[in-house]
Length: 145
Image (cartoon, rainbow, N blue to C red; front, side, top):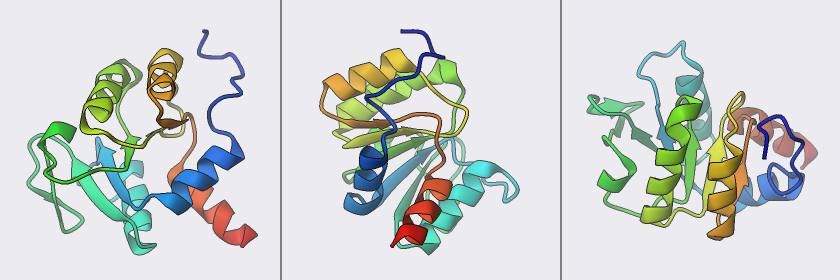
């Protein structure tokens, strides 16, 4: 599957809506402590809209007032959505960890798509979104309601 192939099994409006309405615990992998970074802005927005944010970034103890964990495997409670802000090369490893911890969905942020890892997650029963922003999609959904 080429990365630029138009896929039909991920990022559908129904999958996006299900993730944003059914799940509230979001691990943000690659969350930056710097307020001007997109990952920080998205996580702050989600937190302000009632989501529980779980920062995942080695070397940080706290981001946005939340305890930070070095990896998904270190989070001591269930994570529902894994929102990925890492380079494309890191995505397969993040998806593998998401599978190991029993996450329900993997969300690859705007500009990120890894179809092979996405297909692996989908085949394991996870919901998958690629190349979309949770903040933008949440705003759209809120406007429709």
